[in-house]
Length: 435
Image (cartoon, rainbow, N blue to C red; front, side, top):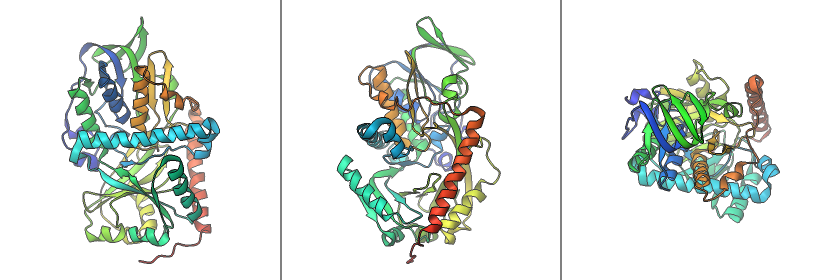
């Protein structure tokens, strides 16, 4: 197995310290089997082995092969779900508890990235959130509320301050989070896998689980060349979940997002983007981007329910780039790629227990890497009966995804978000461009 087992992306091209794990051949017995070697599965395995549990992790491809190793790399406290919608289900106290979990996830990723991946993580501090319409009042309130409730020191940026960082005619106000950061997700996945292996986790790659069933008091997982017997099972398969566990397959939608990487741009890029921080706008289908490898632009955005890649990914993303940075509209592109995220209809992660011993930790699309970490930790604590923090996610549950109509509904909703965002942007007074 080689790097070519991963799709072509900036992350594959800059992959460091990769190790290949053999597929399972024969029978294998373990205490806890984790299905899915992405960020959630790897973190859960690491948390469990540090609690002296015997853990086996299997992946149908390579660790970090899916969205975990292809995403935008941003890490900041948040949930994808609308704040008001979350509060309507769990109340203010429940909302606060969930937000603090998200903050804990950020701290987890920072600690693991620095201690396990080191320089290969390319951890770069700072996260800048900007608005494409006038949003001064809401951003000021956000800074005030986050400090009062959670102690976060966010920095409000008016339009002039934003344009000191971003030479764009499109942006109004912004909020800078010093506790946010971005990193190299595939190198981070590899570091997690290496730490798992070194601490006793058995890792099998190229080992798809084709059947899961109860066998006496345990579980039996059938793979192409063998069988795994486990006392407990954790499903962490994300957007690439198949019909192994029908209840999970019915409860999320695979949503694709797209990213492109420029060729080296030199001073041209730094004249446009004057911050090393990760950047994202506040729209539902936002643009998210950052400078990588010194002078390359990694630009992501656009979501769709199409599982197959469109032929014109570069064209789709370039249109948004031109709207934000006309001076970069013709930059040469080195590579484009996509990944499938798992989204629940309620836009919150799906974390819990289907039946005694059968756990799930998935649906992290749109949340950020930190939520995979804290989701994994709460499941590990639940398995070890150390806490029931995983129950914080119970009010959201495994809502039906709508079946064959679900994807159509999501696509229509996305188009509605786009239309709403554009109307709001047009009604807003233009940003005063100073550069």
